[in-house]
Image (cartoon, rainbow, N blue to C red):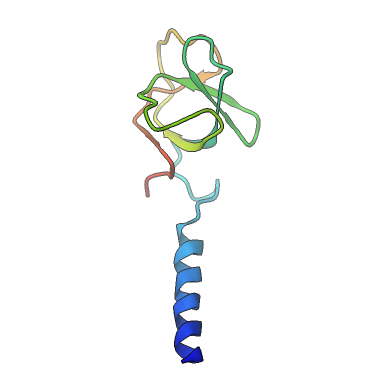
Length: 97
């Protein structure tokens, strides 16, 4: 019985560790950071390197302080006016694979 429990726990740990994302395995156009209130006209996200990104997106289900993954190219034009403005292709709790 203990052997089965050990196998189940080991499998669970493997799944959890493989599900974790680090800054080295996220897609190149994605940024992981914390949603902040720094944006004057747009939502802001600050990454762990201190870089500020701003963007416009549907924020339903998100709140300030949430860690999110923001993906998309740098916007060519924007009314955000601060930070690096991202043209949002994806916003989620984890980055796409």
